Length: 550
Ligand code: AHR
Image (cartoon, rainbow, N blue to C red; front, side, top):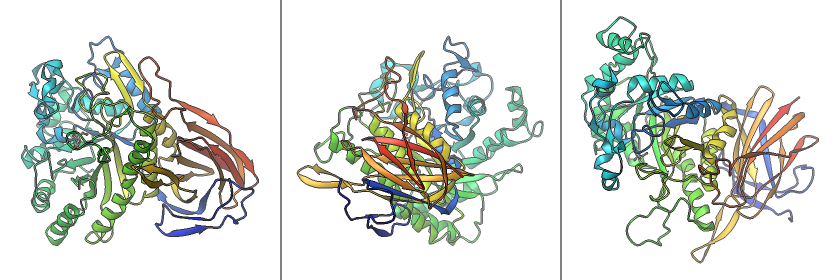
């Protein structure tokens, strides 16, 4: 390809720069990546690689929990294959029990002997879409077989931190105190500690992360931001600490609703009685869901998980890419009140959301198939989190299994990993690394959208460093073109470079029970040319390079 001058935005600074093509690159290429090895930006919180599990459809029952008496291999009732796969990708934190379910959940229903626990109507029973599933299975009723003890067991088995979402809409504030007491009070100290011990857990669970309501602008209470701020103050003042540095997470905006954030923060920070250093997180939810491009005049505006064309491909990626703008805008708004940025962003629900029809079982509410398109959407989102590591402290993908942007799909004794799992496996190397500033220079992808010319960035990604090892992850969204790419690391001596790639000939490629490895990773050749690397990034791919420096 002819060397061209082009202009694009630096993903890190937002500043425009010109690439002249004459920066001492070894030979011509389609694209260039500069890893600014001397510009570390702070640690990438491992917790941005978290997962979300809600009591909805097939996530807990049929997904995580199969029961101790099941013939499906399990540990303490939890699906063994899932545990093993989660350990492989080092899931650092798991959010539970919702979602919207959280604000209808009484944690007391899920403790004590399983045989004595009440059966309840699950929140999603009332959901308009779910209601017709009434006859199709028990999943929309809540047996409470999986409660706090089982969740903590799940976290221990997978070596993840628990992140509990507390009910602010339908339980009093004292219940939050008591849930904290149940989880964290020392052995033998309180009646609730004794109840915990009788279930086999004398030692405290030491839960640090607590969400205070979920989507409080919607299913979590339909509050105004001012009302929610007042409730948030009430629920979070004097929660017992038991020596832990509790991390309290406020229910932030839907997408980029700046008004919600301004009005909440104004209320919280204008009240001088509220100085709660435990308030450290502000949640954001961003789903890529309106994919109709105006083609559907009424009804479901969501796109299809499997039936899509090349325009849908780029438009879905574009919607996920909005995460970067949301992070920047929300951060700016929060900083007007929280001037030292004590409160960080917690993106605890994200991913593409398609219309129903590809779920593996009718009881799997919001279950959907996961293709290469979703793998790229997930990868570009994780790269955004890495690039904004000083702003984002936690992120949990919605959801872990059998729901929305799942890493795993399962039904009864069958189980497989989706392409998203492979993305998380590749990106795990960034956890706890030092984020490095990177500059991607690549021509935009051009395509026709409804008769008009449209474009999307040509390459993007992120880099981090642990000692002498640099990890670079790259998304090539171009459906038709492999991109020859040169990579410079500021003159550092390169000893070794290894590549791993996730790519498929068909953009619709996905795994199934019959073909669980139809989409999987492969090695990718990387050439070392003096102080630079050369690699050919296949079309529609996610790549990880592991570079060892001298
Ligand atoms: O993830 C599914 C649902 O989406 C969650 O329960 C809710 O928080 C969001 O609206």
